[in-house]
Image (cartoon, rainbow, N blue to C red; front, side, top):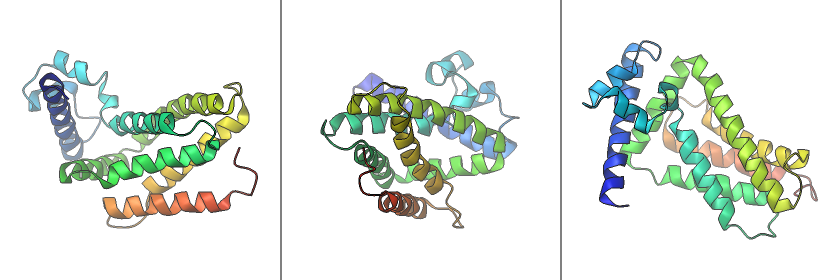
Length: 201
């Protein structure tokens, strides 16, 4: 990563940290783009270079997760069963979470609190996740050599992604990243065991 890219990433993280703190302090709906931008001494116009809208801030993890899964799928053998490839893609996300810095962990836990306090954001997250699933379905269909509208490809992706949702909604209190990651891995292993022989297309 070059100097310019590092500076952009530093600003993006500063905006993210400021936004999460404001969301928790005064509420998501009450927080404005102007306040977030002002907290890191940039203009609202500059804010939009990093996040298209305020709603994109709490959904940043979708962007990271989708990119990680796409890269993992691209690296898998072409003849590998589709669900197996998806499992490896999900484990790449889990590995990223395990390798996070203390700052990343704090952000993730703050994000979880923001979602818990704002049910409407859950709907936005589901919609963003649906878009990710559509793109992943196209990738899986391509690996299987079938039309993107193939229902089995969609089912493979949906089944795999459901494990991440169940893990993310970890009911253990207090919520911490290690317990959430452990639950994700546990649910992923359960999904693998639940497949009947021959289903893995």
